[in-house]
Length: 252
Ligand code: IPE
Ligand code: IPE
Ligand code: MG
Image 1: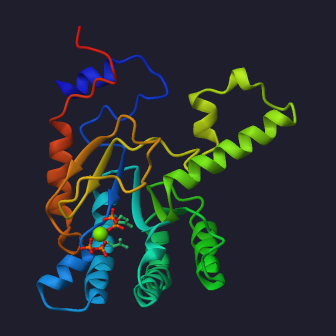
Image 2: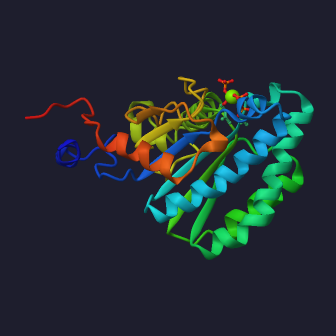
């Protein structure tokens, strides 16, 4: 019922999804530290198991026919953590990209990154470039990895570029609209997320896709990220399917 209604909405920039399986799922992968603490293990063990959960989830998303999966891997604020934890997280990312890229490629996954790349070490930037170039023509699932990503920085950068064009008389300020701003974001050619999942029981967005989340269904799960698997993803999709998306409109 809810889905039929969503489909009947007039098309516009905010319309998305409308199917029982969301087209774009974004996940705030939280709770690695608490998973480790519960077991009296060092935090790195939680992050390692978190990387396993990433593997499972990408495969599950492809199997379920999801078009886009965005994973929040490292926020622009995560640099505030102790240097050894930041190193562990970057190390796991290197391992993931080195070990998984060929399988991702062969299973038809397109890999893309959003976030500020300049602060990343040059070998990580090379792995990112390689992953994006290798998989650029794949179309089964687009995996967007948010790395050193922050929504505020993304929106500020878009504003600066639009302002520069306005000063150069290439843009009429009166023509700035939703579509133009979306085009200047890092997610320019990615549809807005239909559902944003956050694990670990925290109920906030932590500077993730603030513009793009305008009409996303928010699903907060108590599950800690290292425990996430296909069954949990399916339960989140079931929750999504039970919701009525109105986009500001009303039913009849
Ligand atoms: C998520 O787990 C991983 C990243 C933020 C990179 P946390 O490390 O935030 O785990 P908690 O929130 O301390 O449990
Ligand atoms: C959000 O988790 C960032 C990622 C999952 C990469 P955090 O654990 O960093 O968020 P806060 O600090 O609890 O808001
Ligand atoms: Mg956390």
